[in-house]
Image (cartoon, rainbow, N blue to C red; front, side, top):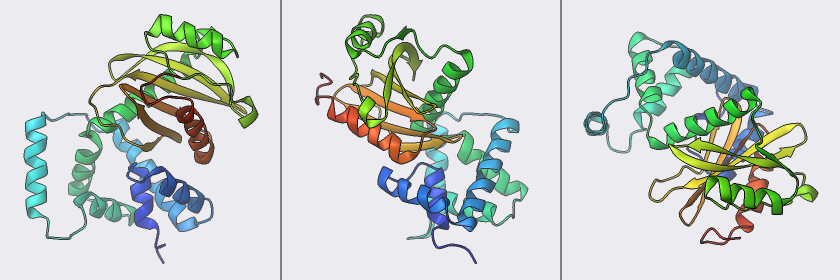
Length: 253
């Protein structure tokens, strides 16, 4: 019998939940066999589609027309069409038309989906290349000035060793087409990349998951921040809380 939280699992995978609810679902997945199976099936299906399906990004006007047509056909108070799609997929009934609908949903993402992919790729690229750190230091007074001079951004750099997050250093990277200052922390054997870049008007997601990585976004003034790692979600939220507390509203420490 399906678990009552099954639809919330779909929302969790799609990054639609706030951080507190996402943490609840992550803990639920550790003990619920049914929901864990649903998540596993969706993860495998998305991996297959992303690997083998062609990528065609529609122009904004076409996307707006398609969305308007879908909303016009949706009965009042009905579930969004993509929830119906995911529910059918989880039940194992995947026709050609359903695959096309899934491809539309997965491969024509909003700007926030593209940003999540960009951050994830930057994180994986740094690990795969071995270029995680440009300046290696556990001293915030070394890392922060280096980032300010090389990335033209001065993000908060804290010493959170007592809380379990050891400062490793920093580097310069690129996110969303902009130069980003990256502060690197380590939690046990896990690397945490914290990106900061200038962002004036783009709406940021709050939370997302991608390929087993937790991603938390926030904003301070005209700076956007994003922390990404494969550590537990509650640990990720704790680090983001510490960094938010270390940053003034205008981006100054």
